[in-house]
Length: 263
Image (cartoon, rainbow, N blue to C red; front, side, top):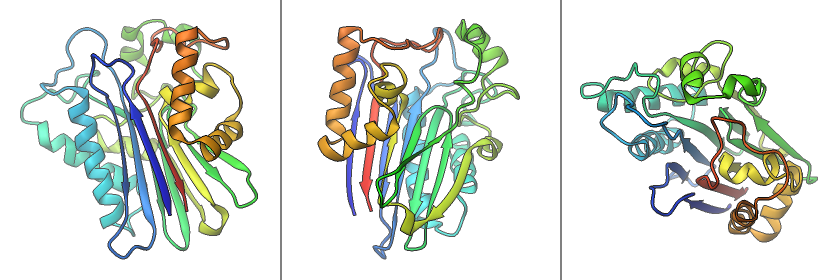
């Protein structure tokens, strides 16, 4: 197994709100990856004493441990346990019912000699490459299917769409959200390599239209994760063509994280 991890803040004056981790069990059989994209809160309170990086570090740390230490527990249950553990760490000091309580998108993958399991919640992406080079994106596309008018302001997103039926879901304080994730498994023999990207890195495809997900994976395989992030930054600085982030989601530069693993 070979892995590569790159995580870069969108703004050097602000902490990186992403989290990435790779776990390898003591047996050396299989492994796991975790990628989180912390949701930057709009101006105003969150009901929480802790910043988003605190949340992603705690949730990501729990997920990195549990994906390895509980190999027989399905990933949605692993995510539910990790959310519950993180919520318990600050339930006595913070209002976890606040709609802007710290939260994150989630990508999980875990592989054994028999299978590759996956879980995606919200708009980060997991790419699976088969031995013949075909690339399958695993996407939770609920956010992208919402009309642009619904995303006009942060207030409308919080009030009507975030973690609401008919909207989209992120990992926050309620473990029940894990059941909303896109999850499944494929035979291990059908996966040669995989990659997880936060939407800050996925802009190469989704914002700047430089190619499809198969092209993105080919770039990762040939030039590496650093090259993908560098290309995204160059496009951002140049004001690259292609669709722009919808209102309420746009940033000139976003935190960008990539984990690439050859199995």
